[in-house]
Length: 88
Image (tube, rainbow, N blue to C red; front, side):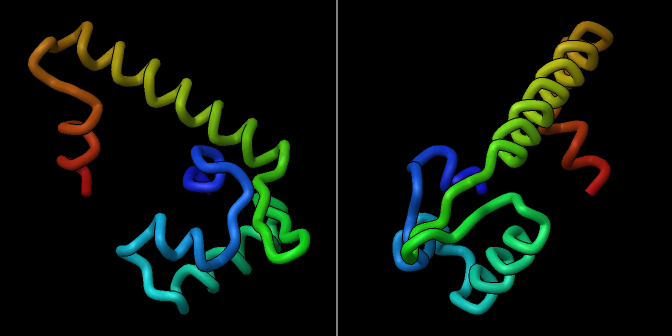
């Protein structure tokens, strides 16, 4: 969904080119799942993010920024990326 947000409405071929780490099958499956929960819509062979998806991405970005600021305020040597990778 972030790829569509960054690059605008995209065809499956365009999304494949923008996400080389995914197989066609994986991308297709992800798009079907996102369509089922109304994160993306397909209109005339192009995938569009929905208003709900845009709002969700913005909320997650704000949460990530807020969390990063709080972690760095407690310990300037830590970043959100270090904290996330430590839990993975």
